[in-house]
Length: 167
Image (tube, rainbow, N blue to C red; front, side):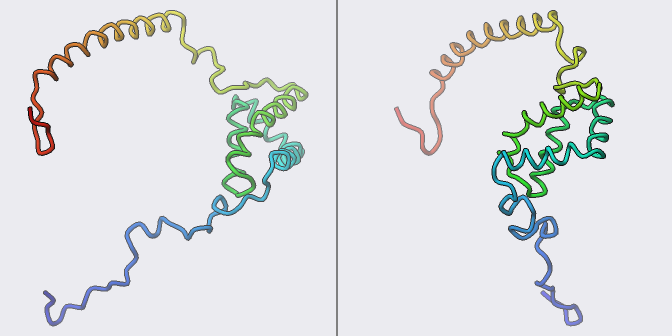
């Protein structure tokens, strides 16, 4: 109940979370892409990455240890966000872009990693793989025994509730 001197509540306030939304079609990725074929998108990127300034920055990143696949994912994701091409076109051109960037690095005598999981320190050792496989096989033996026990427990339990079948 309102008091006499208290103003009426305003119903013109924004909906909670409204500041986090945008009208449909306002974002670049919500509109039709500028380039609709993989050939067009690949030509677009080849022109960009072969530019002298862009190429030197890209090779600097590769020298710092950034893997080629991470660089390609970043490049094509930026294109999707800018509305240049769709996600599926980006996925189709990613291997070709990686190969082109790798060739550019080879010509510039820059050492690079092709995949982000290419680091031998990150790969599990044979001993770790054997322990994991052993754990999995032990877990399989335990899970094969449990269903029989659970099935017996279910048989003993009577269904209850409003929709349960009566015996």
